[in-house]
Length: 120
Image 1: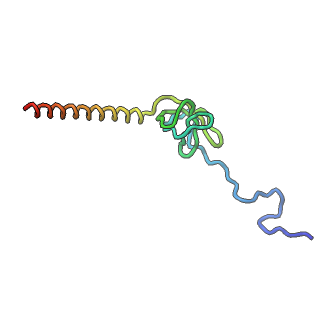
Image 2: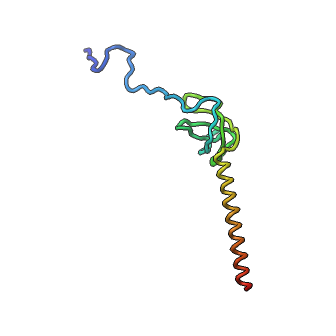
Image 3: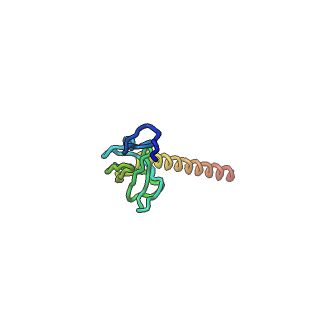
């Protein structure tokens, strides 16, 4: 007994279902990006995501803010090398240091004023 196939086509080798390709990559080889390392891979490399694309960065650890250059792009991930510290992170660190210095200066002035008030 032979059954008829219901469906779209009757030929063999026809693909069924949704065939998903890989979207265009959000990065380019040689371009530089400021990123924050989010995780560590099994191989010990830092992992960051650039617009959803997993990027492996050697010699980094989670929490690092670095500037990277893309060296290789694969179908599912990219690899990069560290170029230097991220400019944003450097500026944030400088701003934090300045704020901390200003707070210390204010605390010192308040201590002097309290000392003068107690002496009077």
